[in-house]
Image: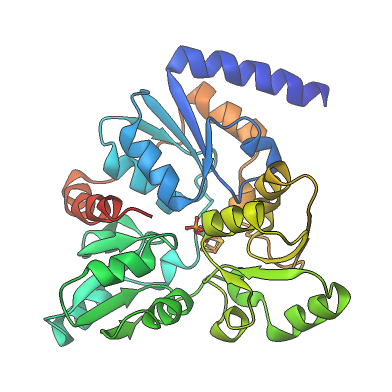
Length: 304
Ligand code: 13P
Ligand code: SF4
């Protein structure tokens, strides 16, 4: 406790000295969400990074999020508390594979989930997050879409369009772990609870839900819903904001495996250290960033 207090004081000091802003994804540890200037989902945090007038952005999330911030705000210094915080789903698609697919389907528009590397974004027409994925798909002119990398989210959005979707086989290790059996067990344990789920989960799990939405979608839904008890099918860090928004409601996470180990690599100590040492910094080669920026800026135009 005492150590945490000291760290928080040091953080405030450093934030001022460096003119830094701290952005934290809802999947971060509570101790990080507590000290962030903005907590948010992938969409909101990308928006904040693009808008800020701070000199330094500390992105508490995973690597692709820091990269997106750097692409959108190339003149800022972007720090991440630990560069080992990657996203396995983002690593499931490679440039050669995507180029081959584009060659095979030359008239298709490439729509890429923001959970992807800068190199993949540079090969992309428009990015999306889970919050605006359906709207992005609907905003595209062509009849054919190459969708990378999340097959589960791809399946979910394909229900909202007549366009032909060519879907990459990636997935989120954490969300994809949730099974029908897990949800059935939770439902029999908590029969009065509503089941809310993130579309990164498997289609058969998503089908069981009372509400399907991005992290922000789930937060908004639970806040205004009449129900008092929820089974939550997304990463457990979301509990911080859910409980803050609705202290009178009960939230049961649908499985003990709904923890993204990559998101949890960051902690308060590493956050303070990165502002102290100004390392590790995100670097994106300018020629990659310039290409990738268009796809992210187009994404930000499609409001959630
Ligand atoms: P959102 O923040 O868009 O809900 O995405 C979830 C996620 O898995 C981020 O890594
Ligand atoms: Fe990647 Fe899934 Fe972790 Fe998000 S929750 S960072 S998609 S592994």
